[in-house]
Length: 404
Image 1 (cartoon, rainbow, N blue to C red):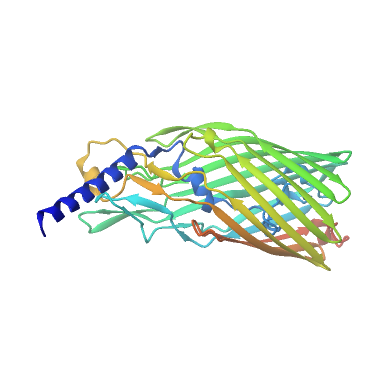
Image 2 (cartoon, rainbow, N blue to C red):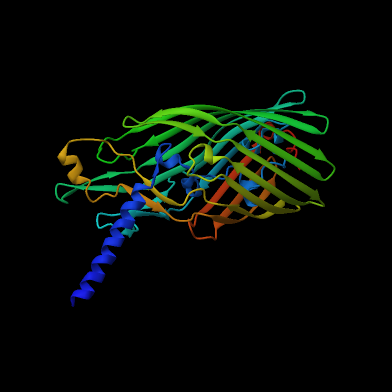
């Protein structure tokens, strides 16, 4: 190889090093514990309410029981005591992050996956507790993610420390709703527990397990006139201090506003909806998310068939830095040398196509839903099933009232 070729190769290598270093220098510092960040929503988010999931996850302009009230409290109507149970299954997907490695190049970790091994979605009860007032209580899991797995080699490669970083949002929802003329008003009291397990901090081998309680309110409105329906809900911004031992975050949980309309005719339904989340308040590096949804449904005898689409844009593209524990222990730093301290996230826009159906039987309903992303940036698939039944049926009373 001549000297000219060697100089060219040297310049190319130097350019690669500079690009890798500059990307890490300009990268995002986490404004919150890792897996609650909004660019992980593309996997962690669970579509609560299986019927709504089937029609493009449109929830704001359709009356329902406790499962729909989690999304818009004003839509709650449950004349009889009713129990609802939901399971959500998300097959693992390969992680989308590209990691900076010791050689100052970018590679993809082929063996790491995002998973959600606990399929539980929601359980709740709803009913009328006073004249025109309806209420519901539920336990639900709006977000769940496990990173399977993060391994650190020790003892010169003879041993491994394996961690399974996880984030679960446990939510206890209390709902009350009532009518005023053609309008319905509702309020959700959301008691949230943000649970983090095996939080990743560079140079630390601690198994950090933390949970943080957040209380949030969510008012909603619903309007019905003839075949037309309109609904909207709003969750104001909230703030919570989260201390994960090696770093303290003053987390801003962003404002969320959703509105939708529906037109019902001849056992058919058309649905349009939009949802806006102000993630720029959490960090200026994040974009606000405007999600668009559309769906249809048709009832044939005792079965309702559904289909829909959901367009959910990503909120962040670029490099980020993992939190670092400042230590002078040479053993800790040595074992972490092969572990990247930063990563790069590509586009994560998603376009879900959803289908589903509900089978009505004496005293209850069985609902199935399927949503699949076709953008392939983060190719998530969600499958959900739900069973609801009227408690009065157990006493031999009348069939439940089916809600339109």
